[in-house]
Image 1 (cartoon, rainbow, N blue to C red):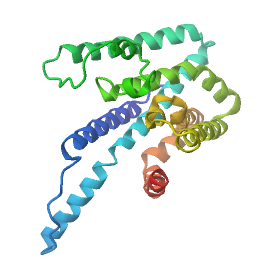
Image 2: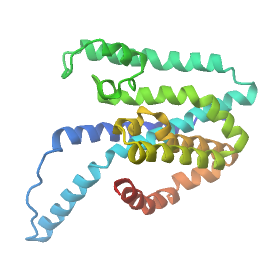
Image 3: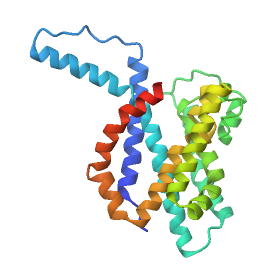
Image 4: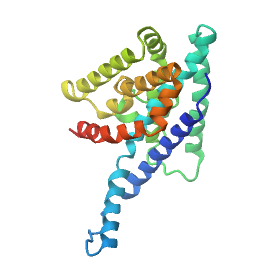
Length: 260
């Protein structure tokens, strides 16, 4: 089972879209577009393009969901590759994953603390201990976005790693369709509880409680299994335009559900 270069490229593009979204929100969140000008063809076209750019740029945060899907795919793919030759030793698996993740995460903290180009809007206090451990969901209001808001993703990823052996077992035993169904049911049920039944801080739904993002992660795991079963069919669907067209059709409905 070979590593898919286009998956890594897709993850890189998703990161760039998220970075652009944060740039856009920083500089244009409270900006006001020039008045619409319909006096001529060129002016009308410019007005339309400006409106489209403003609306589309505001949707960039959905690239986080794409990155979660791709993370589930790559993690499932690499673990299936290991399981082909031998039983997965989960202790060694955890050690390898955490040794790969934590040093880079700590370097990011070091750069933040030492760089002269970082605007430090919050004091460096004892909260940094929880941040270094990746436990930013503890006292979520105070810690989840502490120092660098983007680091919340690491906290969510650690939770997925902790439950991944269970997810992997369920995927191998139940198959991709049932895994996706259970993942969506669990994720949307927990979101409903935290947003409607027992309203909590929205940061839990964002990723503070990883189960809320299980639908995306389970979709990525299922895609990895489908790709292992029929690589040509999955790549044709995703890379030859059919998946893109289906996404364009379903995305407006998903947006309406998201906002409604």
